[in-house]
Amino acid sequence: MTAAPSTAARIRLVAGREITTRARDKGFLISSAVIVLLVLGVMVFQLLSGGSGSSTAIGTVDGGAQVEQALVRSGEQVGTEVTVTEYADTAAARQAVTDGDVDAVLVGAAGEDPQVVVESSRDGAASAIAETAVGALSVARQLGEQGVSLTPPPAISYDVLDPSTEDRGQAVVVALLGVVVLYALYILFGQFVAQGVVEEKSSRVVELLLSTMKPWQLLAGKILGLGLLGLVQIVLIAVVGVTGALALDVVDLPGQLIGTVLVVIGWFLLGYALYASVFATAASLVSRQEDLPSVLTPTTLLLVVGFIVSIQAAQDPGSTLATVTSFVPGMSPLVMPVRIAAGEAAGWEIAVSVVIMLLAIALVVRIGGRVYAGALLRTGSKVKLREALRAERV
Image (cartoon, rainbow, N blue to C red; front, side):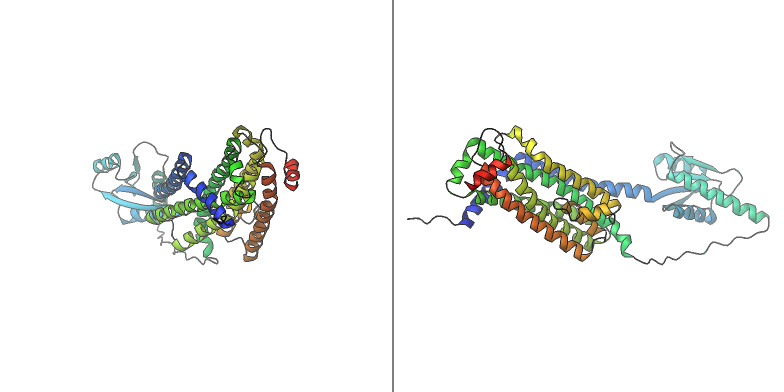
């Protein structure tokens, strides 16, 4: 006589079924590709937008070293690196603007009638830098005519009291991008769990499954299987994101980038365990896919609020709102990674937040398991929460 499979074997069986079923699902594959493309697109956009605003090329005619120095200093005032090219005559300079070799050309800057040549608009960074340089040269020329000689201003040295704050901006951006991925995955896998529960109830497959295992084993297998699939997906996204960021030179500190990504992955596991349990429990109360929104809306709203707060936390990670919500179960997985990246979360705060999340997960799994067991075999109209709890006791 063959021995009955163990509890672990039954959970593994359900988990394997969930993994193989969802891994072949077109919605899962498409969503994975979209998230990866979104992460890469954000990095490329940041690279392109950062590069276009940090440097400019300006040509000069009848300039010289003094004009070049004035242009470079004008660019430094607005945080723009200026590359200066000298042209022999105005015709060559105008052609360089037309060909896109330079953004603007400054003609006769040291004279009485300077001119800036641009392609289509005078309202550009290069034009503003050229105008500032002309103004500085004009003042220097007039003072020189009065017998006043000017010396270059001394170079300013900076004494940065907390150098780490200069690097936290990138970490916050990475954490915020990670939170966007977390939000998308929580919604995606929460829907997978909920849809799977309703499909089994409506097709009566659940009756066959429950003849060989207990309800909590079925619930655990579902959560574990989809959790492993979600973990593989977020790790894949992380690998693609980190590789892309390093290849495109979007970040300056690879170690800090990887640390932030690991923090996001850790909070994904905690948040997923909580939300998957809630979504599965809520879905067990209905028997039709059309009824799912009504029972999932409260949890989805909590996710939306947490996502909005995480965006605000990126702007002010030390605010009271960010601090308080980073301890609220369900919101902490979206807010705490941003506070950690910004250096605003103390070690004890992180520990307390994790402990609260673990306690919340244990509570939700315990209560959710009872509701799941009491409502899973009840089809037809929507089951009330109180009825499900009462049915489980019988």
